[in-house]
Amino acid sequence: MAIILIIDDEQENLELLKVALGDENPDWDILTASSEADGEKILTDQLAKVEPVDVVLTDLVMESEASGMNILQKARRLDPLVMAILFTAKQKSLDRYAAFDYGAFDVVEKNIRGTAAAREINIKTRAALRYREWSLKINFLRRYFDPKVYNVIMREPSLLKVDNKTITIVFWDIRGFSRLCDSLKAHPTLISGFLREYCEIGARVIFEHTGVLDKFIGDGIMALFGVLNHKNDNGAADAVAAVNAAIKMRREVKVLIDKWLEEWTLYVPDEIDIGIGCGIHTGEVLVGNMGTEVRDQFTAVGSHVNFASRIEARSLSGQILLSQSTESRLKKIHGTFKILPAGTISDIKNIPGTFPVFEVVS
Image (cartoon, rainbow, N blue to C red; front, side):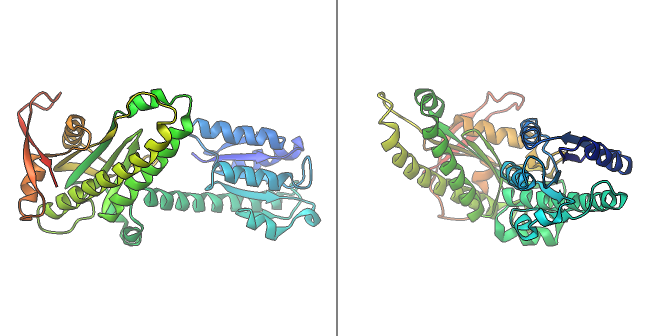
């Protein structure tokens, strides 16, 4: 369902446009505001409810001749992908170049009371919705995939369809991070700044090794390797890529932690002991775009995802633990990694059995 926000300080115009658009588009949720402040509040409230406004239709001249421009800038600052259409009967007050420079999708230079103007706004709003849908899809793809494979996916969207695939799943998590957050609760920017850099490293390392960034989970990261694989090696190359990514991630996060320790120790008197743990497992899962009309979600589901997560939970700071199915694939690449047995796991909830695990030493 599309969410449309109309902003106009003349109540009659506001109601007429709402009725005109509602009659033509009964599936739209049409919100109204009569001032800049009311409009900004609705935009903010909708974002907080994870139901963002799709298109803003705003009069140019309200409290001031710049009201529409102000709304446009605020809306785009809150949501860079929001579509905005300016309308006005006072054409002399409209700087079309400035409107487009601020990110307006379109402008309507007609009196809002006219049926022709309402029809034009309706058509342009529909076009804006189509453009927003396309933009959201692109933004969705860019979040998950390396820009190098983005064009491939755009040419072949079927790659995103839900399907059973053998992939390698990787989970990372920072050991000791919750305790550090509690120690630094009076200095939240020292946590948020670190997390931002940590997530940037994670995304870059995953993309460099042809992986898919599934999600960030607090200080945890989930990645998938082999989603777009067409090699006939039963996932061996993907397992190698996943382990190489884990090794590089361990190295780069260690450097990042050492850098931030210089800041953290200014405010934390006790010893700070944090480090990244990693769990890797290869198995067949259901993977693809499992999104809804409200939100796209490219992810993997199934018991093998849960198993990878459980392996990660057993890893210590600095450890990279592998399942047997991943380790057996790495054996095909002789001499690439030094791997040692690291015991067994036998108490995984809802996954009965005894499972060997292995540690990547180098």
